[in-house]
Amino acid sequence: MTQLPVGTVVSYLANGNMEHPFVGKILKHYERSALVQILTHHPKDALNARELLQRVVISFDAMTPAVIADDPAAVPPKNVV
Image (cartoon, rainbow, N blue to C red; front, side, top):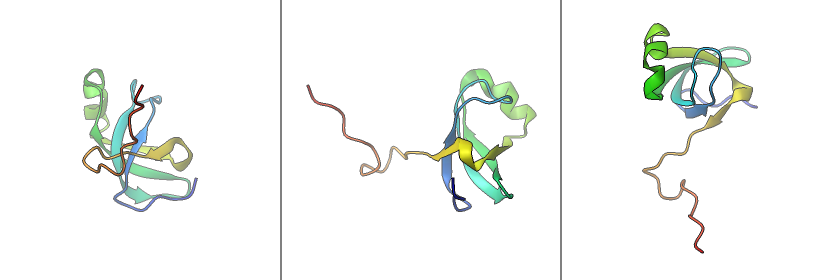
């Protein structure tokens, strides 16, 4: 994946540090990864997030841009049956 700009909100699946998916914001770029500030996480990961000081380094290949719920254009329409 190409580098996302600093400040981009991304989502990330569980990894070795966090047991559940979380959402974060890119703070700094490295060669193939980024320093991400954890914004929201599962309640069971509260201790893990605190131990990491709310920051984690993750690979660009493993992150995806997060959908912001406040932006109606970003939320896919629900299937109507």
